[in-house]
Length: 445
Image (cartoon, rainbow, N blue to C red; front, side, top):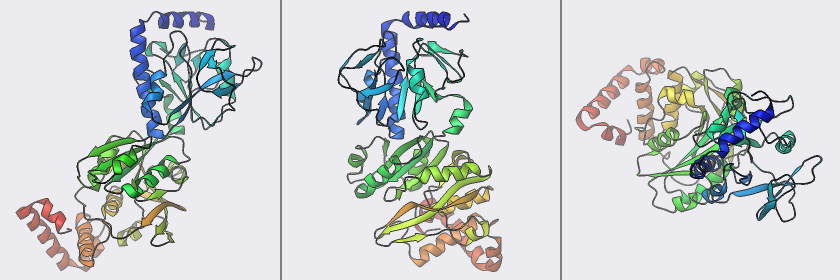
């Protein structure tokens, strides 16, 4: 089989010979993968296709994602074929497609285009029906629209003949998986996971979620971990197309690790549920991080404080020595997953505060540095007492706990205060032996 006509005949026979009940079951699995994809990235406008013959049935997709709108193609003339959009009801159209019967809409800003076919190659090319409809559509499609081919595993093959102007898709969805095409596609459009840990901040949560969904970077999934809230947080979160994980209260570090373990992104961003992000936050920090050397584990920005106070914290370019004095790195930094996993994630024992500072210290201990994006991309809300409202004694105890945890970084401080460091190390060990780690946390050590 060398010609496209022979390939079409072969793959059409493979697909058409499958029992109807198998195709229905596979279609539901395909739609489940697509629904998860749309929810994770906040996608609500999808260019779809109506099942023709033995293609994937996308019917279950719309019901699976609240707020999702499927637009179906309507051909505006045969020469040249041009895609406009409409919604059901559908009827046979001039290209043998099922098209909207109402007047065609102007092309909407769809975020995702689903493309059918007879066969799909590993490099993202597809074997169509020979009419050129989708080839013309893809040629004029804006670059920011994600293109996913949709089919069954039996339609997958190693390679297909392709013309020089053919545009490959970004990925392929089958009943077994949603996969990106090759390493280059995943590297060009890496997925970023925004993880929001929440406890009783329902009054602010909607703004945090919306700021995550409004990111200009197209490949984003949003995950909420609700840490046993007693307010309306879960009801608020249910209004948004995100992944939601309720759990019993275990502390912010545990909640963030829980979300990270369930995320799929190559990069992670942790957003507090009372804060917000500027729309360009992910895009600009990702650009800085991808341009940095491999030992740069995270990108951070300036901070815009708002609410009870209004000012810009300028931060500073990364300096290991300056970081030993105080943190200038914000919580909502963009972190390489590889670096985050290499250092072991968040330490859940730092429940009193400074858990973000401890993470940056541990990154430094393992040789990872940061890179500054000199823009205020995180919006930090000032509103009364919080976990970070510590008295001077608590701050001093946390400071010395940090020093004693990383003596190799703070050796100058230990040499300057040798007796104090020995006393605190003795007290820390004694508390652990007598009462366990819970008392150590309560004492702020």
